[in-house]
Length: 497
Image (cartoon, helix red, strand yellow):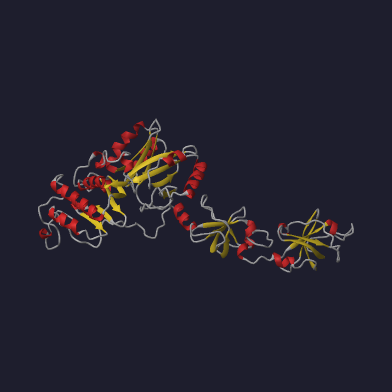
């Protein structure tokens, strides 16, 4: 819907008439607003929702001088924070937003009644109205107002996600639990709250302030958690010379945090503003630089994430998205990347590093994790847990294998001969299977049929009877003296040999 007569287009389809690309702030602008109202009336829409609001910068086409307050003065009781994604506005208020966009005041948004009606204001006074009905009466009214409607399949300003495959992290219970954990680890972090494009607020978070800040966040805001980025002012000023487009954040003596986005032409001006700051920091606006710790978008009060915009994913966000695909008990494959000096084995499972603690490497006894796995080896393991707060995944290699202990229990009462593997003050261990990682059992000193002059050494063979297999405690008890008796004298975990 435009004020441009199609008859005035040249052979390339470009408008060649005399209508200006800016608003007349008068009857033509009024005609646009009356046309929007006519469509809303035909459809029966009484409320519109603000979607993807933007302020200044890319929201200002630059055809008219910018206006203080972006043309939103007195429109929202909460001020600029009332101009947020999902804000419900009456048709009258929606028309005032359209007026501000036609005048290029510096605020822009999509206006929608989901599934029924959309209003988009584009470059050079092009107005796009999407309707679920034909609205012939409204079309007739628009033509009578001197406007020129033209049917299109879609608006060029329809929302399109940056990455349709990207799963946006919501600021849900897991997010806030991780934030609490992060604050505990760092003692203080900063929360950047972006409630509209090019409009943000910064909050310093401590253990005592998280919930207070949370209760005051603007609905559907994009959130970014940063480490304590504020440093001495001189360092922040020096960092300006190394950047092109940055967001400068500073804290005054009263604890008030202010931020502004500037380019290299504005560095000198912002430097003077930093003169009275007690701390400041600089964040690059270039993609991939100075990423926060993790990000999220606020869901609605019912927990549903309806905001359509996306945050730039951090490594932590990518880990979160991967962890959401895992579940306890799931069998995964991965590659061993390292074995720590303290015994934990690290495994790459699709770009995320999981871990296997020593007890989960094998059902059978071993001396060192390298006896079981090696760096570069591909393994299959079971997921024991998915910790969304600490972003950790413990795995079990043995859980993905058959447990040999029930078979060992079936050997209760058997008499076997095996080598002595270890000698302790209270007894000796004897391997009862003919394999290097075979199960071992304890022969308590009371069950040794040895005279005082006899000496047992590692490697000697003993014939023993299996008198107990405790599957729950992973212990096997043996007797050298018993031959057909059932007397039991203690035991020790076979795996500790």
